[in-house]
Amino acid sequence: MAKSLKNSGKRLRRRRRALRLSLRDVQKASAILAKRLRNPAFLVPASRLHAFETANTLPSIYRLYALAKVYKSNLSELLSWYGIPLN
Image (cartoon, rainbow, N blue to C red):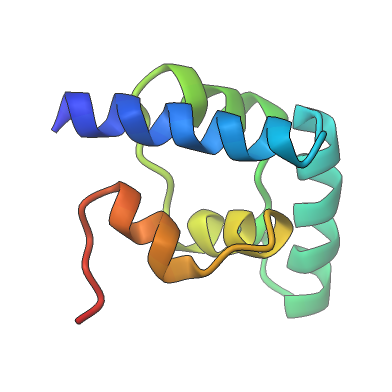
């Protein structure tokens, strides 16, 4: 499990950097999403995103959804990085 979390974190970081987003950019975008959805669970603080990318920390489904939206990705793709199939 730890290896898959490490690889998932690296993928999150690569995707963020490919989009030229800073940790704070992601935090701001997720805050807008959380406000629009009226649910603070969608907020991805910069410190938590850093932990997801480097410390083998597992994001909640709410935060994965927010990251998928901010990164213009499919939620199913991000879930697959964590070994969670949707089929």
